Length: 136
Image (cartoon, rainbow, N blue to C red; front, side, top):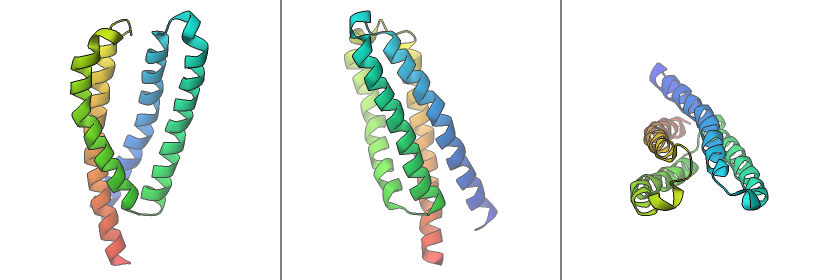
């Protein structure tokens, strides 16, 4: 593994770790806009979503970083690309229903930028893992 590969792997790990608190903050902002009578079920859904983020992070860390595979990276590359395409469309069409959520536009913009960075890192990590698989 050369220095470039190590740098890409370090970027992948940094982006993965950075995405966890961004997900938590985004979830907290979403939950803060829910009316009080619906907040209990929403909190349970939020806890479930945060647990899903942690499980997702562990699975992708294990399958892409510890054991250099490409299948899961390809799946996340495709699903992240679809999310990147749908984000502006959903933002424009559903903006009125989320206007009471604090910092909604900022949350969407940060998520959009994180998604672009995530795609770049996933693409580079997939290339590194593909190269590592051919060496073995």
